[in-house]
Length: 109
Image 1 (cartoon, one colour):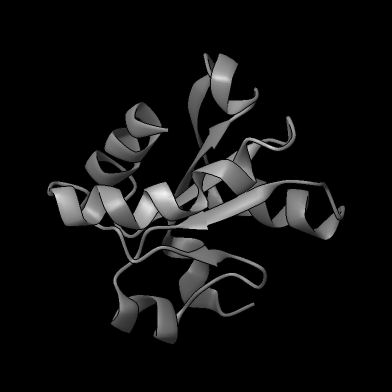
Image 2 (cartoon, helix red, strand yellow):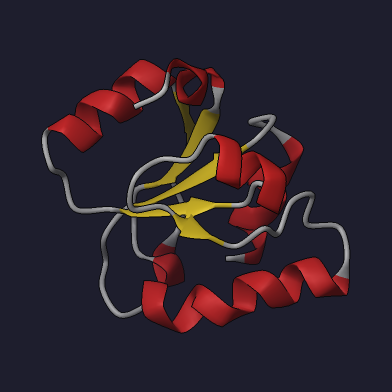
């Protein structure tokens, strides 16, 4: 993985979407270790197209929903919601800044 990826912060939902109650930040190294263990999880990347194309995690679901402040941004997430709800796998939100966009994505999901 590219070094730049590890400057990103990710937000983890450790329960299913319908019961999401554990919102916490995960540092890039911890996320790398989780991925290296082949843990089952959803990587939901909200970066804009240019950032996603430059540095994204393998297997990440591109939503291009950042900053998640408009109805069109929310619609970009709605497309993937049903697929995420099919199991209780943890969900990692990859956010370009690691704060507001991730929190808004968490609240929406």
